[in-house]
Length: 310
Image (cartoon, rainbow, N blue to C red; front, side, top):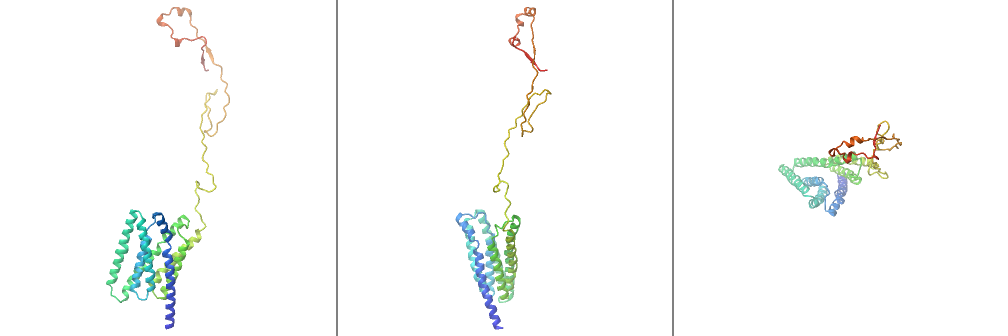
């Protein structure tokens, strides 16, 4: 029995070391994002909520490891996680706009100071040395871990809607699955249900992300008609609509067919105009007085003719 207990402790220690290494890689995965924030001196709309929640989870698990004996490997990885997440948040507060900075500060005060202080106060009032404090704190840690593992649901929904894995790198999903397997094995070997239970959900969500990545990795967004490669965008030709009107023998107006085509119009032979000559009698001209003189515009010259259309 002593040999089996020693072997179980050895395997638990081995899985604990592996869990520390893999979890460290998960903590360091946002480094490219924050390097870009540092280079551009802007957060570019990134949200600080995941980092605030992760810091709160690390603080709770480190407190749980202090309360429970024989959980030194939980202290190490969550202590490192608290340092890394604090650096991330400090950089976020340095380069975020004022509104985002104020929101992050309120979340830190409400969650990492207020709620964590309340949890610590309630558990410290419980009897020391008993299992009640460990169980209460353990279930609180399980609830927080489940919320952290459920956070990728928004990413899964985004992948399904856009059919693109741009925002879900395969490496992160892979390391989350490996981390969940290792810490589940550590919890089972240490007979710690509070460590093993939340990693079951983490394993399921990690597999779902990997399956979605394999399903949509080859899919591309349908290109828009204006940006399709190799597709020539043809603008409608500018057609000036010209209405051609001619007087036809039937008295109808002839025009182009809708402006798209201009049909030729046959020459129309018009009838010759009828010339009406108006003669003024000589006697009538003599009887006129000066007041009845014909105005220039009323005079009809011999070379003028009135054309009357029939």
